[in-house]
Every structure is written in C-alpha cells, then in structure tokens.
Image 1 (tube, each protein chain N blue to C red):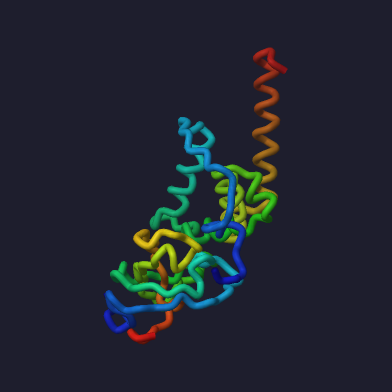
Image 2 (image 1 turned 180 degrees about the horizontal axis):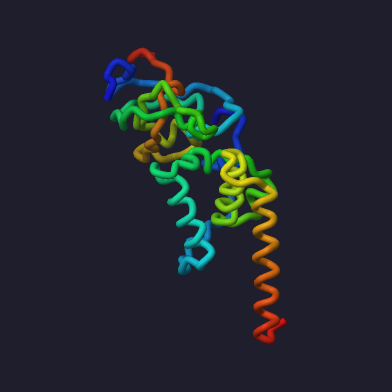
Length: 99
Length: 114
C-alpha cells in the first residue's frame, strides 16, 4: 500500500464534497455535504470512474470507510444508528477537530 | 439533505415502493448472463471491468431502468460494452440473434409446435 497517498487517519473528521459528476461514481448523492469520521482505510484502488470507461484508473486512490450518524444525514429521531460508507479520497475534504 | 445531480441508480434515501424480498430460484437465462459477465470480466480475458458494467447500466433512461429487470439490464450492458471494445459489432450481434431466432422457429415447426 502506498502510504504517501493516504491523507486521512482513523478518527479524522471529513466532509463529503458536493460534486456533481457527469459519469459513473461510487459516492451516493445522499451523503454529499455530510460530515463523518474516518474509521479505517479499506485500501488503495484504481479509480472506478476511469475503469468504467476502459481506462487504466491511475493514479490509484485511497478508499476510506467513513462513519456517519444517521440523524446527521436524514431527518431521524435515532441518535445511535450509523451509516458506514466506503468513499474515495478525492470525494473527501478535511475538517478541523473543533469545526 | 444535499441537492445534487443523481444518476438513475442512486436512489438511497428516496421514498420508494415496498421491497419484494421473496426469493426465487435463478432461471437458466439469469445463470447464463451471470456466467457471461464472470467470464468477460475475468482478468485473463478482461473484455471490460465491473465498473464499466455499472456505468453502462446507469446509462439507461429512467424509464428503462425502472422497467428492465436486474439481468436484462446486465445483458443490455454487456452488448453495449462488447461493441464499445470492438469485440463484436452491432451487425454481428443482430445477425446472430436473427440466425438463432430462425433456427428456433424451424425447430419448433419440426416438432409440430409451429
């Protein structure tokens, strides 16, 4: 695994960027703009948006498993339920701990 | 909740009909389509990647996406990807379909079902 590519560590708070891709992407619409916490690094993989068009998918991208509180994403009374989503590096931006 | 461009498959969090969770055995057609995709995406063959399959499925119109079943979406995508990758041409696929259709009709006539 190419450690240099990894921008976030478990525990880091991140926001999902509000991009509107024109092509295949793996980041669900409902998470865009939401804040979550990186729980682990799933690995470093070729970019699926590029592979989808028969291209090499390089450079590779880290894929993070990010935890969101259900009540932060949807209007929900539940405070204990979580959403875990695997999100590629270029979809995430850092947030300061006190932000 | 954020407002964004969502592709036809990206329905997480939207209101929808009750999900049919009943189970039924796979049909021969479904098994064949599944096997075809496993072979074509195998690294030794590498006709396309599963990401390409997903992209082709997501290119369906909202009407077709809602109307077509899971494996019919797959086989339509396989056709598109094989043509994109120049493995087969549309003309070759159409000609083969026509040949098989005629052969099926003549077989059923031979058996007295025609």
